[in-house]
Image 1 (cartoon, rainbow, N blue to C red):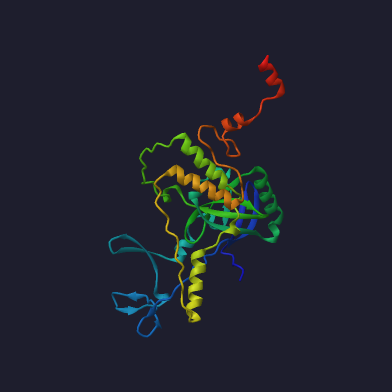
Image 2: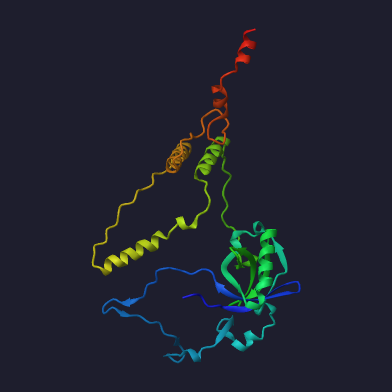
Length: 296
C-alpha cells in the first residue's frame, strides 16, 4: 500500500507559498518476532496495568504526563499540545540555504517525500529547480510527532525530499581518544592504492540485508520441516604484517575487478597506474639523437 501523508501544510520562502503533503520515504523491513508461552505456545500479550488499583486499564483511561520530580507529574493533554505557539506546525519556512557538504551526515535522522498539492505545482517545480541549479539545501523547522525538528529540503529525482536533522545538543560528544600512532608515507601510499582499487560509484542495488535473507530462509526451512544447515565461515587470521596484508588486499581487489595493473613497488613514487615512477623512467629507452650526443 502507498504510504499515507503524515503532515500537511505549506513551504514558504520569501513571499512564495507552496501547499504540500509529507510522506515517509523509508520503511523498516526487520523480521519481527512474537513471544509465546513455551508450555502451550499461546501468544503472550502485554497489558497496561495500574499498580495502585491492581487492574488492567483501557486506552481511554490513559493520560500523558511529564515527571518533574520523583513520583510528581504534570499532565499534558492533546489540547495543550495543539495550543503550543509553533508556526512550524503547519509551515515549513525556509530561513536559510546551505550547501549539503556543510551538514555532517551525523545530523541526518529520517527522510520524507514532499508532494505538492495541485495548486502548488508551479512554485514547487520552481523551488526544486533552483535548489538543484544552485546546489544548495533549504533549512527550516517542522513540528512533527510532538516535536519540532530541524530539517533540510533537497531535490532528488524531480522530487523534494525533507530530511529531519538532529539538534546539536542531541549529538553525543566523542569519548574515544586515540593515542598518537605513527603512520609512514610508504604505508599511506600502499593503503591509498588499495582504496583506488576498490573505488567505484555507489550502487545501492548491489547491497542486500544478508541477515534478513538468512533469517527468512531459516523460517522457511523450519516451516517446511527441513534440516537447517549452517555453512562454516572462514575465520579471519590476525594481521601480523600490515604491509603484507595491504599488498594481499590490493591483489585480491584487482583480481576481483579483472585488472592487471601492479601494486606500488619499493623505492619509487606511485603513478596513477600503480607502478613506480622511477621504474618507468629507467625502463624508457633513450632516443637515437640522445645516443649520438653521448657518443660524441
